[in-house]
Image 1 (spheres, rainbow, N blue to C red):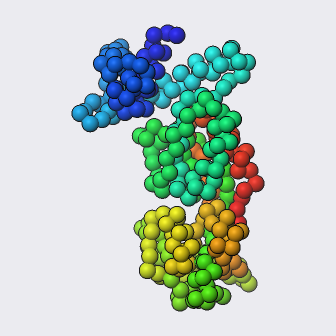
Image 2 (cartoon, rainbow, N blue to C red):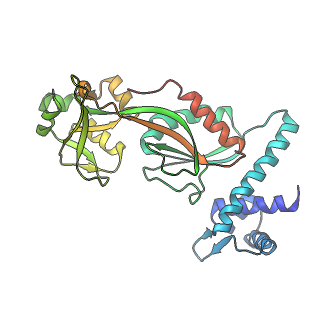
Image 3 (cartoon, one colour):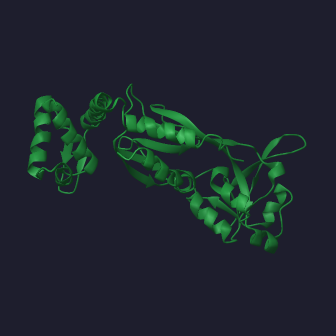
Length: 302
């Protein structure tokens, strides 16, 4: 392998692990050797790739660009060697995936064992968070996003379609009654997200006229997580308007009941797998996204 490719591999390991010592442990090198190899690249390029501090390493803009290209080049080398030795390209290496907690728990994590059985040379690093991350900043290969895609620089493939569903537990409905019309919600505890918005309203559609409208709702709990609100609804605290993909198993099992379905606004949320776009996609990334698309096919929910 060209010595520059070897240096690239050291740089990628350093960026991925966040320190010279961690990269050295992974590569079987001393921290000093790793630091010197990265410095050699910087000297050759005439620019700084990493900002060094006593606590952590941080990529410079030039370092982020070099990291993306280095990943692509190393992936192409792996693909070429795999094609020659096995006759086909084998997915391998570290794959960083980020998803919301709800999607991760309901859809992604149950698929992990089968994916790893099919592709044992892939090492998964999965983060579940409801915070929208910057893929480059967090060095993430694939992220699962729900709703409109705001970053036009990302490439996306659709995984699911889902609409919002108002749900309550059987126990809550027994104690407080079943809302028959959206106006009845004024007498119910409606759990809501705490994201900033002009008013706390839920959308509806009149089943007779088809006219869309919204009504204010109120309750004694706000939360920043669908997982949190779902758990509180299961505990009988109140009603919530949650993603159908999240609560479909609860509805099917009878743990939750969908209410006011005749008045559903029918608003559809799209769920995508997104990645940083470039002309060559690492085999492990492409294979993982293909696997998700195929595994989730037909799961358009509610």
